[in-house]
Each structure stands twice: as C-alpha cells, then as structure tokens.
Length: 188
Image (tube, rainbow, N blue to C red):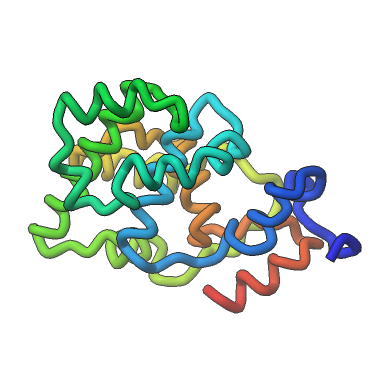
C-alpha cells in the first residue's frame, strides 16, 4: 500500500500511516467512541498526535477504557494516581477535564440526549465533504465548542473540536487525491 496517494501527514511514519489508513476520518456514530475521541483530542492539545497514539493504550487503561460512568466517579486520589502515571500524558488540567467531561456526558444522557445523535444532528446527519485549504477551526467548530462548554464540558476549544470532527468523520478533510477520501465519503 506504499504506492497509494495519502494525505501528506500520513506518509512518513508507519504508526501515522496506519492511523490514517484505518481510523482517521472514518465516520463514528457510537456515543462512547465519539466521547473517547474527543477526550484524546483534548490530550493532544500542545502535543503531536503521534504522542497521543503512542500513549493511547495506556490512556485507555488509566481511564477505564473511557467508560464515562466509571470515569465520572474518579476522586482526587485517582487524579493524583494519574498525574504520577508516567505511561500517560500527565497534565492535571487535561486529566481533570476528562473526569469533568464524563460527568457532562452523563448529564446529557440523563437529560435524554444521546451524544452521538446530538453531534451528528449538528451537521444534519451527513458528513461534510470539505474542499480547499483545511483550517484549524471554523464557524462550525466554534459553535459546537460553545455548545459543549454551555453543557459543562472543559478543554473543548474550537481547534480541538475541529480536529475531533475530522478524526471522527463528521468533516471529511482527506486530501482530494487521497485514496481514503472516496472511501470515507461512502461510509458517511
């Protein structure tokens, strides 16, 4: 598969190539999986995605496979344990944001809003096929970021939200010549 045309960022590193070819941009509708990816994008802030991918398995273990019901119960003792865990990204602000966001996610559920249905409704249920230069944020990510913050979410700025929308296939920003662009468009 080395002769395939890919997005430029997915060509020089085997781990990034695998992520590009099998995960990135693939439409995700499952609420828990969408929440996990949003949390991982929050961990990426200020870092490279490669670092998050390298630590993803450890992050999943540390955060109970990103099961919001379990993460919402984390205590100050859990935060201290996580901050001292060298296998994960040990940012206290990011760790506490994940715990807070688990509670916000559950509050949405308790109010009768399914996270996956809510985010897909923001774009009319069908993935946006983006053309042209790819921004780091746009009016949509700014609106969704504001809405998430109103719901109590933390560490969900418009740049993080835009990266999340791309990663979960709500916005298809694969390069026009990339072999995954048409595949992802069909999956949406």
